[in-house]
Length: 146
Image (cartoon, rainbow, N blue to C red; front, side, top):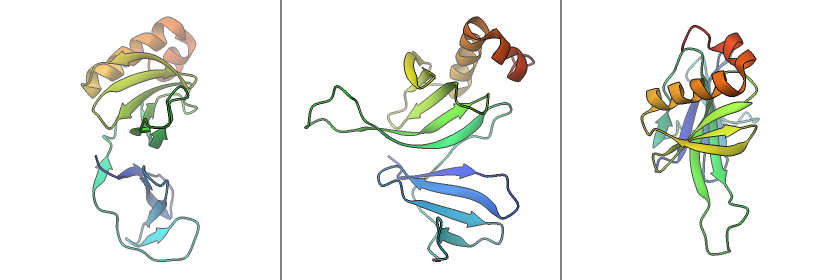
């Protein structure tokens, strides 16, 4: 399992945000190649052991963290995810990448179904779900894709 997740940013000063999925610590990378602990002026090293999400047209990636199973017992470990892809900007329907390689679909934050472990196929499945369940969102954000 990689401990850091890189999320590319599209701002003038910050080019990437790195999130540690175990601790939720964050490091920002500037357009000058410097690395800072988030929300401080403290320089730090570039994170190693980094998961880098694919950049995809119409799908934005948002870095993740751990998911706590509300029904879990004390001796169960949290489930970690690298992050989620979303096409509508609000995460209304998202495609979540778990560290074990599985991919699942969330609808308004609630688990709906398991998707293919192939990301391209999973995003097609998610697009079909959007087309069926939320045609207006599909039309606005993905109509040229499916």
